[in-house]
View 1 (cartoon, one colour):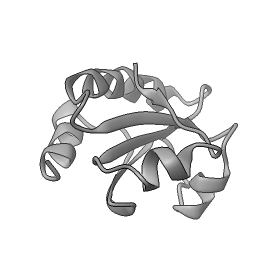
View 2 (view 1 turned 135 degrees about the vertical axis):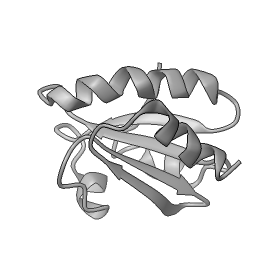
View 3 (view 1 turned 135 degrees about the horizontal axis):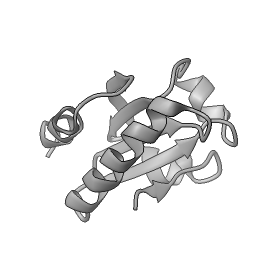
View 4 (view 1 turned 60 degrees about the vertical axis):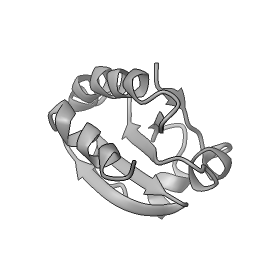
Length: 105
């Protein structure tokens, strides 16, 4: 399972990570988010130890969704060294997400 990321742990988990970080911004009511969720869980397992992969529920955690301009969900952001380096909005195939991480490893 992907890591649960919240406004409270975002700074430490995402911005201060020494590994690339992928964050899925989602909500329980969002149909397309339910399609992306299992893909993100798979990516999380495959990249365990190489990258941090997590999910942030935008209904419960609005601070960083607003800070990074997440207006449509699902939105998957990729960070490296605390900097936003990739943004994917909507549902994409798994290889789109894995390529985003592979480019940083």
